[in-house]
Length: 223
Image 1 (cartoon, rainbow, N blue to C red):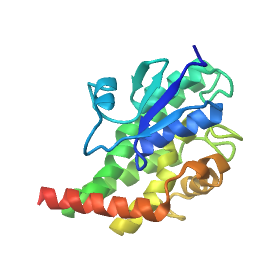
Image 2 (cartoon, rainbow, N blue to C red; image 1 turned 180 degrees about the vertical axis):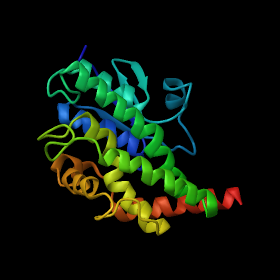
Image 3 (cartoon, rainbow, N blue to C red; image 1 turned 90 degrees about the vertical axis):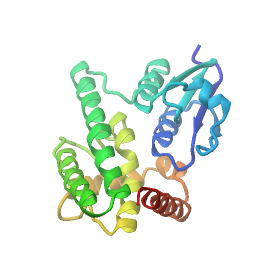
């Protein structure tokens, strides 16, 4: 089963798709990548993810799996070498807890800073900084949350290391400062220095332009 065809339906600027590519690369899994146009979704995407109609979707042996955290666990269980989740049950449960916190709190509030203006943006900023302060307190005994090598939480949090500085540049709002969140800032650098991570990052200027255009489109449509 683990040697059957693997296909990833993603989008080049999607940090959630990038999570899956990082995990597949860590495992050394050969996969076909299909870039989706989310303004004109393919029938394949709609068929593979009829509930949310979003990327990423992993198709393994003809069977689709949606939602990035679910996909990450599926990858780790299906290809059990080079584990990304901790072996210890308690540590594994904690990793799942913090992953859910990051997606429910950090992703949502940072997205609010990027997509809102005025008082709504200020409210989102305060909430985002509080959620990031919580991540700052997670014990980290080495360079990464996974230890000496990147693991599940590093992959889950990884988008922030690349996307947050771009969002800060676009909005003029600093969320992760050297003085305010030094541990998280250090982790950003450590994570982005990993060759496998750098190899898969979208081009900075292309992504910056995409995010600027996307933000302007959202603000215009809501005004």
